[in-house]
Image 1 (tube, rainbow, N blue to C red):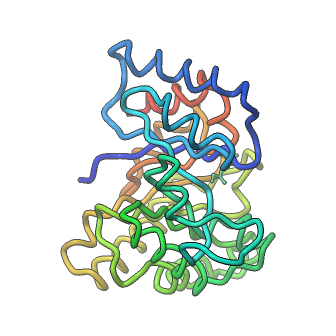
Image 2 (cartoon, rainbow, N blue to C red):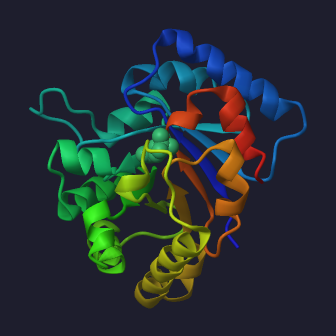
Length: 247
Ligand code: 13P
């Protein structure tokens, strides 16, 4: 079983004063009660360098997006090379908010993931169905299609994480049942094994969408769930620590 990963996606939240949250998390991790999982914080671009140089032991720092190119005339964009230079070790790609707000296709997400891997960073590739797709019984078709198209051919368990985030569960306080989470994660696992052989068993598959301290333990115990991608509850060290405690 892969080592679990609990990742915080701060989205467009966090001013310089947020450093206090990182320190609170660090105090927790160094007090000996830290659970047996990897921990990652993905703050906005503006905080990556500061966080990476002050990150408590055991906390990795990542980004929430990148461009497909290394450099060039792309106003407002950030490359994986720049993120690596700033101290990031992971990059989230294909979050549903980027797929929706910026029209990112699965092919573009794969190209971004390839850019991440080319820098020696780890990609967290996000997939997930909308509520209409779930209601229409298309969940597995949509999710497995995104996995097939967004996860690069060169992915290995050491450089790629898949995150299943049902769009309708993000920021809503609603989650699928544990059985529904297990069904999707087991289907993703099957697709990874079919494509990558035995290595497919080593990829971490995170669940994301309204994870909080009170539901983390049961969601994290579901079949083929290897950690969490946490939005709102990652903004407060006490909540994020409560989720880490699920391990
Ligand atoms: P919430 O935890 O706020 O539902 O967000 C989940 C998410 O989108 C993480 O990437």
